[in-house]
Length: 142
Image (cartoon, rainbow, N blue to C red; front, side, top):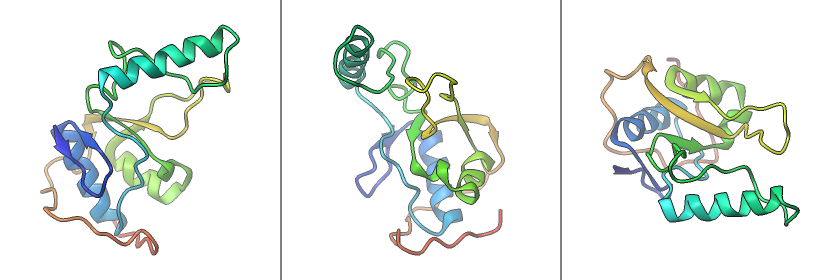
């Protein structure tokens, strides 16, 4: 597992390397709301989801720790998916939106999952430092 830096959490080593390449290609830090998740946090989220399904207060869709790819470090929630150019960079680096559902209670357009076999840049070296400017994204050609 690798720390993504800048308070963005952690990810499995190959997913983290991909995110660092995404940072470089975007010219800014990739927007990550949450990446790796502990089993305890995943199970707490799942309990809240089940309570919501049974009439409790609203809670976002969640899977148990046994099913959550966040617990494996191969998922990241990012608002970059709402920007077509940024989303294209994520896709080129092996990420896919895997939680898109017609049920609005389950739809998570911000959720991405890493697939190494889809990573067009897997053999590119991951940078050792990351940009810090989140104000002015600079899109670099792939």
